[in-house]
Amino acid sequence: MKFYIATDHAGYTLKSYVKEYVRSLGHEIIDLGPDSADRVDYPDFAKKCAHKVLEDEGSFGILICGTGIGISIAANKVPGIRAALCHDTYTAKLTRLHNDANILCFGERVVGKGVIEDMISVFCETEFEGGRHAGRVGKIEGCSLGANLG
Ligand code: RB5
Image (cartoon, rainbow, N blue to C red; front, side, top):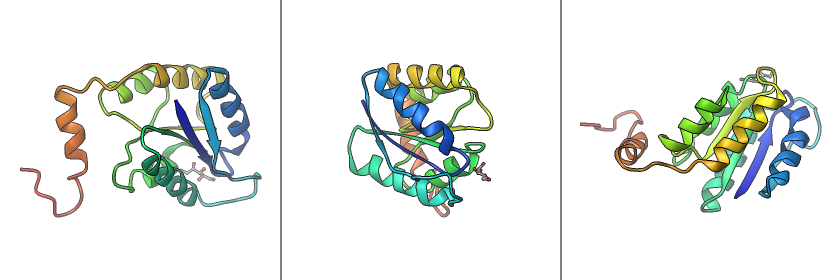
């Protein structure tokens, strides 16, 4: 699998650890910054990663901020992105199975390295189930203001 990774300053410390772990699983990971722990705005990095994931078909993203909340909210503003804020292996597995998530998000200040490793592993191993979930995922793109969901 191919991943793009980005963080803000509050997720920066974990970035090199996560990159190494993803590579140890045999996957490719491309770092979109930032390049230091200086203060940055998470929407800028969420957007950068979201656009790369959309441009590079079949690729996935990893986004990290302090809580994982801001960076996931920002990424989900980009149509076609399904960024899942996960805290455990159950949510990381189910978001691939049911939501076809294309970006995994978590908070550096929230989850530990062991949980992060397990979430990444299960995210990589789990395929979208399709079937009844495909229609629901399709409807997500219609959830903007004014859209008629029927
Ligand atoms: C930065 O202090 C922090 O607000 C950010 O990393 C994130 O947690 C926002 O949701």
